[in-house]
Length: 380
Image (cartoon, rainbow, N blue to C red):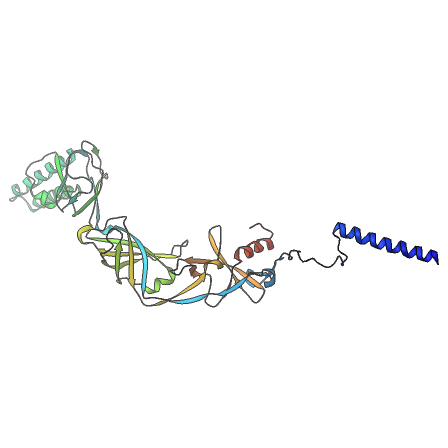
């Protein structure tokens, strides 16, 4: 009986000692398989599902990214005003490049850069033995024709052909018909005249410098009408056409509206911006519009449609934007998207890549993009 009491006492003492040690070390008496309240959630493990035509879908349950939400791609009505920014340039049909057609030396420069010149105005005096030789040949041929009035028909035809050849040579040297008619004696100096009225936009003529055939001396451009070159996105091309009326406003003259029309539409689409270039011919009273100025263009068009998506549905990588489109409840397709700016803050206009009604991931796009790269064994 005494031995049983002693054994129970020892057993009780050992149990108390075990409880004391466990309390000291912070060891729970609960089962080791039961997770504690501070345990981190299990990290999402992505996997890929291969579809036809090379498509890959990321398989991921929504509870593995609890902050993930889905938003529908929306189509909105675009108002009947199309706006874009353009740059003012010379109308290249109204720009004349003045070159030298003979060998010589510049004796006198009569105009300078940004001067306004009128058509026919003297702009340069050139010393050229070539010109003097051509004048002498013309005067000789001209003097020969009357002396052959009583000669044979062949001789008269030959004399006329010589005169025509001499006149043609002067014409090729850039001598105007009016100047040819005034030639009375051979002189080594030649006065060059402006071929059009306009602004001297480039001046490479320096007094005393030698020139050769083909050397550029001046460029003259007119500013009565100018071009404004701008870009419109490819999904808006159907809303514009050549001859369409427009208005242009500049920062320099914010209260003045310049009227014009669309003169050209580029036949090509820029592969980087998915934009089409347009050229607008705009009236320029008072020459207020200057080349390289920026202008805001407004074109009256029929109402259209625009596809928009929240900015937080997009992730930028390298040089492109991507969105994750829901395919069912737990599969997502990574899709490249081309976007443009949109008037509503926090949204972008979709040019290509998404369709109205499709659901895209928002809120955790960056995390989803990292999982996509992990599933491919890459680093994002």
